[in-house]
Image (cartoon, rainbow, N blue to C red; front, side, top):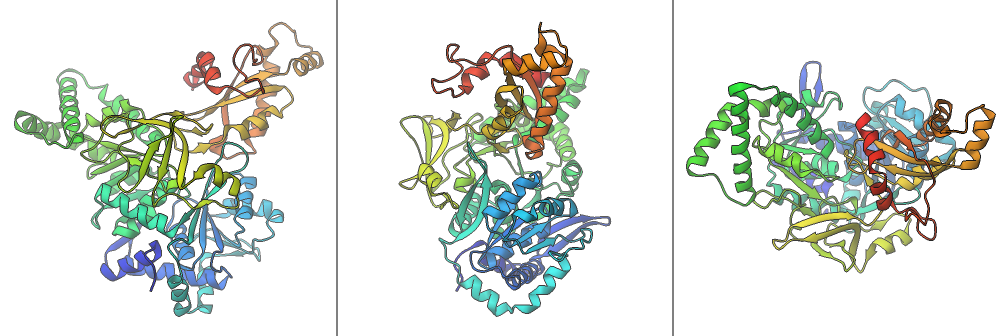
Length: 593
């Protein structure tokens, strides 16, 4: 008898609702749907194929590609076969891809297309464990003995019986490793978060209770599936509760896909909601006369109703009448244009979102519930839930999860969602997981009503507006390897892209100026010098994923110093001091964009 796990729940869905829609993909003729029975058959076939390729209990399978059925089928198939899936971001560079494949000891890698295959091919000499590369459906043919098409891969399933597969499934234990989530640390290469089958199944159940998921719900899968939050919304939650998943064609087609589907559950990182905000506000600002007054009135009504609902109430009396009219005249017109006509649960997570953005949508009768957490606790630590929401907070602790604030202000977490540790990294595990408490690295406080507020970050991780965790030290170290650069401070927390503050090595600059016949007066503003620095920055960018590229830089007139309070006695950068002292230079880089 199989333990309660995501693969076991998948099989149960086919038993409970065999002909209901499990997922859908967009084709030239429209959305093509797949039933739960077909879905289970696809996962079983892929699981048997993985077993035939040699994936044993505990064996790792890497997945590199955009959100597609094949991504999720392989993820579930690996777990069903007792293996361990590990997603890789599509934007990762060849060395980053190779690191994860090698670190996880994966023998099989699924790639979306030939572009992603080329990354693996470039590094194959550094991947002695890798035996098979599988292409997703529809990819161009690759003439290489290591590479299998999707159809060739599935054909391998003939060598393994379903009884053998079920034996693997039945042998799964609750505390067994289920998946690896690779996430950046403060220094060095990314760490692999180990999540157990119990971690995943418990969290999927807890999230469903909070959001009241049902088998009538729909969602759109478009954020990176290598991120635990998107896995919860695209894999574990839907499999646990029968939600129909629609796969976006691409990020470029996201607005069109949303309008076609009008999903009931919408998860987005802050950058997504910011784009919606920018588009809608620019249109609303064009309204004049009576229309402008009507919009202003409707937004006022929306804010009052949302505030009431956030505290567990519902509009009555004259406010209820106003709300009904505002809905008829404004909300019902705006929501479908965004693809949010049926949205009953909008969620923002993976990075902090500005309260002003939340307030804006409240005025349009759209409540965005902010969730806080990290890969190490399967995504949610706290959640602003319907009836218990405060904009600016990250909500009360998830029921069943203990959250406390340490003496130094750090947020500590304990519960069934807390991870097993970091794969092959006992030192990092012992630093982060102490007596069962996850040390989040974030600073926070609770208000009198039990709402958690995040006040800062103890660890030096940049979380971009897109929700990507980036370790700045890795990029800074590479920048400082360039011949003219003395110090580098990467900026980008809550921003759309990364920038850098640079200081220059005086001797190296003097030599460069002499070699290029440059005037020593204000040499840092010389076009040749800046072009040389830009070429160095471009070279560094080649070493990292696109989201980790430094798009702009500012050259400061002097080096950092201990005397000015910018460096510690051991020459470590004081980021907060530098961010405050050079705030004008930082804002100028983003203003120019």
